[in-house]
Image 1 (spheres, rainbow, N blue to C red):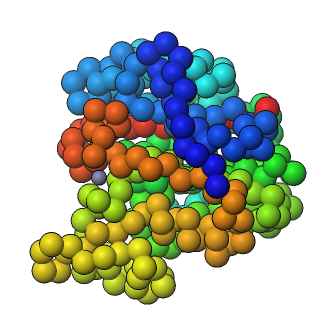
Image 2: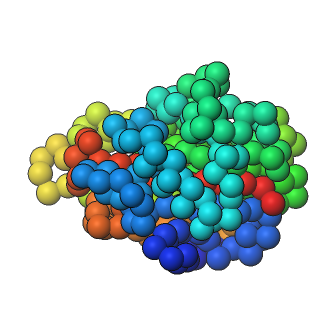
Length: 270
Ligand SMILES: [Zn+2]
């Protein structure tokens, strides 16, 4: 099991795993909200292209963050996320789409590639970002899991897509589950608890203080789906950070309101 740690590059700080096999094959980072140029609720490193941010701010934020991580922001492709179970395969011909160029890609919540010419990005602000990398085949997949995606096993869908479409083997896959809202703060109602129970994830939901309220563990549930898909426990790194608890470090939809910014995970095969 790797440790989720941070690296500072000037005003930008990004999270990553200390898993060396992963770091040998990949440039990647999970952003925080600090070190950017956006203001108001988007203060300051907003990376959400669906936010009401000035275009020049967004581009400058991506330029700064990508430079810190070691990626050229012109190479980044971004999705239109819709809480789907769709993963889109992309290649170098898709670089820049939805950041510096229009996109003809289908709406989706995950990207997959084996092409060194494109950098993948997804964004989030309480939802769970999951990075998957096969160190043998050198196939990269990013998925964005809200609670619905989590109980639908979207993280496992990522692994299955890697196996079916890129000849990956689960034992070669290394995973990072990034910062998201923790079980300390993700309070949900009966309807979410029912879905957790149906997905045999009852161990990842506990009673809240109020009647009919519960606390759900998104990171634990996503990790569970990776294990079910055959990923080795040793190869999974989980961030300990709760975006709600740490709202000075992260944008949090629940802690900061609906108009808050978005973090991103950006990754590119070396
Ligand atoms: Zn919390």
